[in-house]
Length: 211
Image (cartoon, rainbow, N blue to C red; front, top):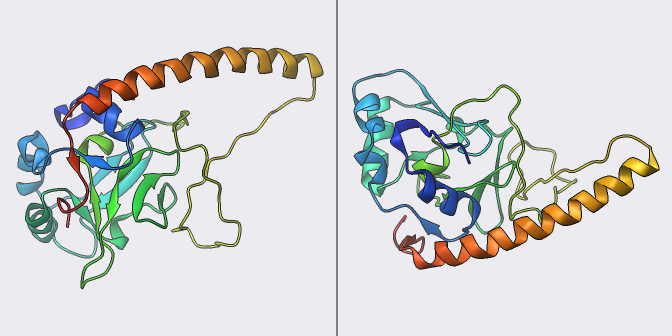
């Protein structure tokens, strides 16, 4: 998780919602309480929203509509609301249950379609990152998802998590495996501790709040 998020987004809340959560959201109108609201209501320029973990671009708005329309719709629902044209599909996936995630596993929000089509209701804390040159991929709890190889579109309906081992030196593989065991054990313990802390915090359940 980037430690200096844009628009003064709360890093602790961002970490919990982005990385240790699949159901809950920041409170309604949170985005309106941040400097983002004044920034976009006084400008017609496109704004790029980046993954709070990796810094990869995820949404660019407004596209296919005015800034006023983007703001109005987001105010109506309580969370930043994006349409298909505004999604950077190279870095975003929508899972079969509607959950919207980044290509690297950051939980972003949910797709809640309406009469105008897909509407991606997104937590600002998850898209408040600063851009990075290399878009460093991080380990997340979403590594159990695999890419649907039959899906040739950029949109996709499954999460892609790619890993690989470079080099052919056996000794390197053995050493790397041992280090990996230590890292997995440590991160597993940290995850359990932080998940407990996350469960103690009050977030808003998706059901009924983001429709």
